[in-house]
Image (cartoon, rainbow, N blue to C red; front, side, top):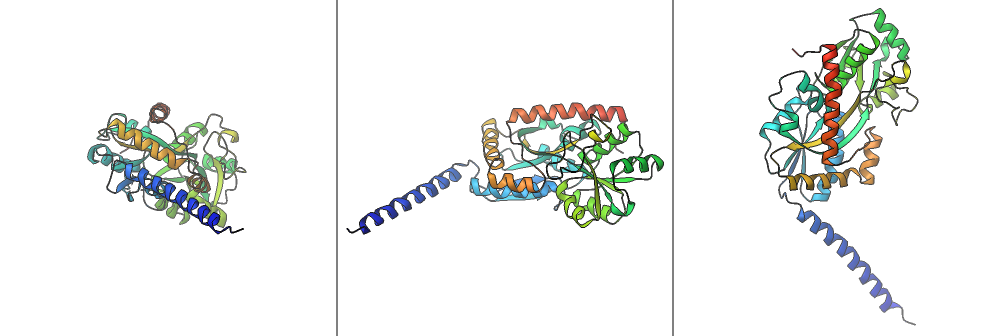
Length: 330
């Protein structure tokens, strides 16, 4: 029996199926309403956690929508420079979106005059990633546990300096909340992002940092930094042996760090819905999920309304901390 016609028919069917899938992908990409390069603005310096997550997400996003995706780092003022740019200067065609952060969206409005109103001037798209920070100290301090840190801080009031990614950032308020609950006095030193904050921490110019795991992990492994506790309500999934601050004697302490996608409120609602669909698709892709988890930043895709409510809840929480601590920004 001659099987060759059957083999040729099978090969043709397989080729047709591949061509159909490729054509469908092309059609979906061509269906994306924005035909020019898309920009994701990040409010922190390159090399930090926000930048890393944005690049992971942006790579897959570009593949899906069929247009180049550019990462634009507008660092400074705890991320507020990027947020102000988005609120006041971003085009209304949806070609520029912002990887926003908890500081400018929910904390900074209680600390300073921003020149914009996050809820009014920025439209929510979806939560991106949500994760606890890790309190790390320079190994030269010889502090090995969270209890030792508290004891040292109480015996050296005003002497321990901690880095943050900027005034009003998540890492800043994590320290303020810790000082308030533990009745200690540490000194806040703001930077333009995780990378420069880490550089000074490693150099011994500051003693501690409420850091993202992605930023600190290589230096924890090398022994240069000592992890003391996680800032979330549960242990960090990548560091399950490290206790939370809440379980270390301060129940109720929780200060998670998150980055979310927002854009100009001038962008039409149908385009906002399309952006939500595209970004949720990326955030649920197994490769993206795996890579973000490996960086200690689990994705948390959701609806536009869910993000709006989360911003409102976080704003209320941190607003109370700012008022209770009487925090001001010079």
